[in-house]
Length: 272
Image 1 (cartoon, rainbow, N blue to C red):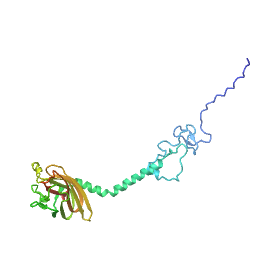
Image 2 (cartoon, helix red, strand yellow):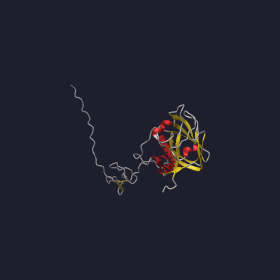
Image 3 (tube, helix red, strand yellow):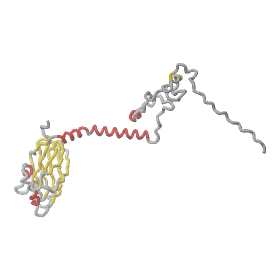
């Protein structure tokens, strides 16, 4: 058999130790391996590490600073460039920024309302009485004033049976008044054994007129129970409140709606 020529074997590479550069005498030493390097180098010629330590390297800026960063600044060197954002990265930054700005604007615009709500929450309550009262109609001997006489064994009734939808009680304050709560006692008295003597108001629309002429309507829903029922009624600069009957419990042809008492409470002048 013929003899094939031998294959040429590649020379094995020789590993040579990395020595200092010839023109790096007196250069900047690497902070990692202390090898001298030329001043213009950013990475060590021996260990390839950055010529600046980690704590001295520029840190990644927060998103709100990157959004308004100077685009004319000198770009980073190769190997130190920040990760590229692809897709909606930059759009997402602007969306988040717009949301944050919107929240700040909303907070500033509603700051006064929030402060007033906090004051109302912690304020001491004091009774507030109207200067005048009237009603759309009243049952004989049970006029509108009996619903605001601070006695819960007297009552007002419209003098008609069923739910008396649309009938109303109205109070007027001689000065604009801030109201925080109100207590309504339905029926002819606060006693549970007398609840069946009359129909009880279920839903009442409170039509509020402010000092500047603005009108606000609050819907109050009462329970079918005896005694006073407290409801939050936080509104300021009130001049008139009209309570309009909308529906009633246990309404019938021989029963009329009765309200024993309506009490207003505002902030006490002694809140210290």
